[in-house]
Image (cartoon, rainbow, N blue to C red):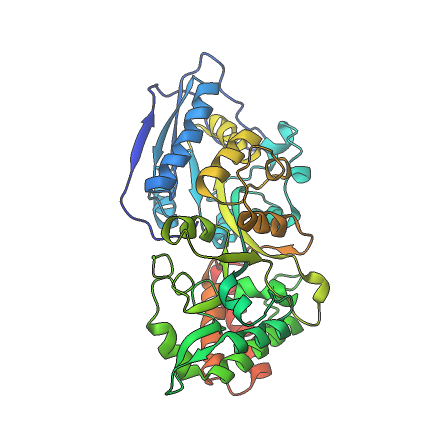
Length: 440
């Protein structure tokens, strides 16, 4: 989902004129428009090109069911544009975002409206339809100011031919991953890396600290919302494991190797070219491989987990697209009808899942016979259903904490942090100070 945006797009789904009042005022919320009330909803999303077209199909389906509600859909809209529109009193009625890390800011500042009154009014049974981990990343403190619209889950991609040549089965623990990575690695005569079994660097493709953390049972925050990096032993375990494998390769050696690899979403991605035997990535990679390297003999599996917690195997990290009603939306009542359709209607979610190749976010959609599933994609559906699935924490400093952790990981792996325990304590303070400035 989180891909580079390209050209701006806009489309009007049939015609219509505006009407209907908006917003949550005190304890009163807007009801849906009557059948004779003509309403035009402005919908902003980050989708472009093929993904935009797939999204438009579902919006068309909604209009067919609600002919009095016309949709003006604008793609290529990122979070900065959405925030600026709210500040300028020109917000869309419905906003779609790929940045779940911004949820805390949206809720804390009121930039996205709390949807709880609408969900309760319509008796949606939301809590029983969507996995707990996904509910977590659409809620901040006592506010649910977004709903989940498809998810990304992360697993292990492995080259079947390379593993078979070494007699290796997909690893299930970090010790097994380390052993497999070393056996699969091929070096040139000068010692440089020709093929890497697994790249442990925190800045390689989707090899991100926050994505790996659940594999070590590491939590990002304490119950009172403070950073837990220096308290939770999982973080120390994770960074220690990464450093040991990085040192085996040689940090400079890895840096030179990765600098010469293809771009993450291009056809010369290192996994597609056979330069990397195993990697962590999301379910959407299956669609890229089908398009860019359809003859690649590969498999997918849950990511290996910490040897301390072997029973966590099968789970992983989940994030995804969120949708909400911005402050100042002119047609909040009608907007919620669309939000409810996009996030709770099984047919809509299955159609989006098949078109975008992301994971549907309700249990019914996950089990739908109409969902187009192959063996590689099924892995990610199973991860999403697993009890050990974990999502990102909602914080008031948005994505700042993620960048801070990534920067720390790069410094640690390159040898610039001499003491891990001390470094993690300083990392906590840096994150907490940033959150305090952000308005916790």
